[in-house]
Length: 514
Image 1 (cartoon, rainbow, N blue to C red):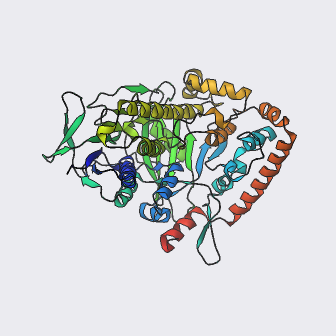
Image 2 (cartoon, rainbow, N blue to C red; image 1 turned 135 degrees about the horizontal axis):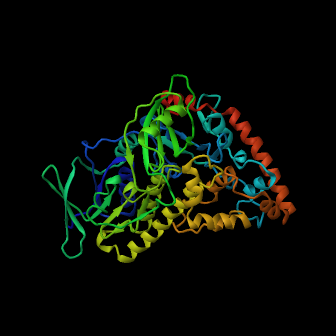
Image 3 (cartoon, rainbow, N blue to C red; image 1 turned 90 degrees about the vertical axis):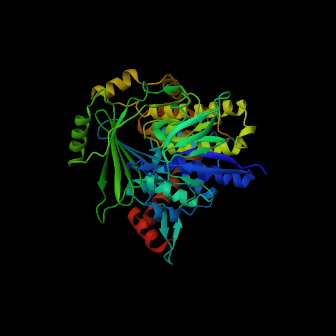
């Protein structure tokens, strides 16, 4: 009887264990005869700088029957309902980017164009964020849950939220849910390859053992242990359009009784921006900056001046921003930071891992000998386009009014990608529509107008006159949109008044379970 095909994942952490979970579960559902191993070394430390997901992670949990309340309890996770952008458009200006989409709960009139509620808000000079349920929740640091009379919790709406967490604890949680996955605690010392095809055949481990495999997934992070170190995969740099290249991580404690942010805080600084990501006990923080404009010592002093307190720097992280030209080469596929890295502004890394593995398992997962050159080319084309879209979206955040430091002047003059300029020029003639983004991921979530509108509106990049002209074409639609937005604003403000505070929600879940 033939042995099961062996899928070997190099690297644990969030990306590695998400991948193991999705592949193992999908193979079982598809009745594929495969087994999965994860090679991760207890000798390699992780820095808990805090990580954020997108709503795709909650969709994944629901798809695979993972209890999110257990996830909160076991990992110290918190809600992420959006991003608070401070000092991006100009110093002293703040806007929120909620991740829910009101269009999904409103039955549009026949023939109504996509995003008509967003268009109405811009035309009327109203903040796009105000018609989102997550808008008032973000401003008030509340959870999207209320308490019923019997003391149990009830969700305030149908929208998917995201999470903040410590990636090491999430890796352990996912590991506990991955039934039948073998764990190999070792460091890779060498790689064996087939002399003709170049495919990887086995890993040489520091334990003296050989680990043979049929398909290998590189989730080794910045080390890119297989895909670059062994297979020399070419890298496409985004350094020109995404200007930061270094991070200074640190922690801030959450004091007893302090309300906990339900957002990722992205706070623009002189040469980049500070992130603050809450877990239940502390904020994982960091200053991601360009070392063309700041030394590490200067960056530390700037953070301390901004926060009004001393910090303990936990690492000095240098990174290359960009993606692999091809994330799948031969019998090796790279995910997570091995595949691409963009600055952590919109949580693209974990989102990308989830969507890419869902795409892989739904469309290409089969026994390795049945995988074809056409499969690899198609996957690489789709995933390459996905990451390029991420790049353009993040690049758009730098189209601001700021010119108060050399960094911001350089960004405006030299760092905007042609696709960013092209999209913004298009959206000065026509308001952004969902149709402007092709579906290259088989219906899986990607960056669409749902996430663009709060950012474009918050940065002042949309022309109210264009929106007004579009609304004027249909007075009936304009009246419907006005009534709908008024209704949503009232409904969501009322819902927010009943919502639990973020810290109160977490305390309830930890004590009572649900």
